[in-house]
View 1 (cartoon, rainbow, N blue to C red):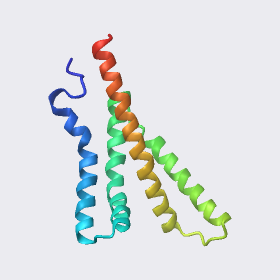
View 2 (view 1 turned 180 degrees about the horizontal axis):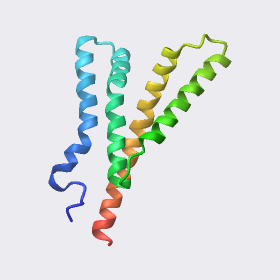
View 3 (view 1 turned 135 degrees about the horizontal axis):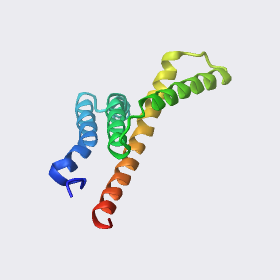
View 4 (view 1 turned 90 degrees about the horizontal axis):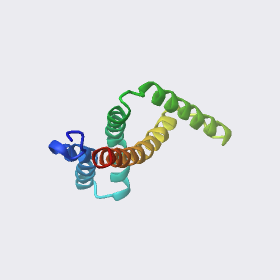
Length: 131
């Protein structure tokens, strides 16, 4: 029964990335009340939090780290972004490719974090009540 997702205050731990993202947004928005710039900076600063959170949830669910696979996928995506820049006739700039990749990583890892949490909660409930 100790494996339940809200046992021992663990539910607060799962909300930490969302809380940190909100705090970062509020802080940046107070300094500069431009919503678009505040969102872009919030995405930039909170991407790493979601990457670490996804790695932790994967470790909890599957019992193994997949850092190598994730790095290979990210490097491949960066290569794809740079090829798309080249094919569009734009100047191939590594820094702009990394910025695009970083924003895409926020979207990817944010959705992955939500999906993995839902999966983990359903799995915990299933193991607790069904088995």
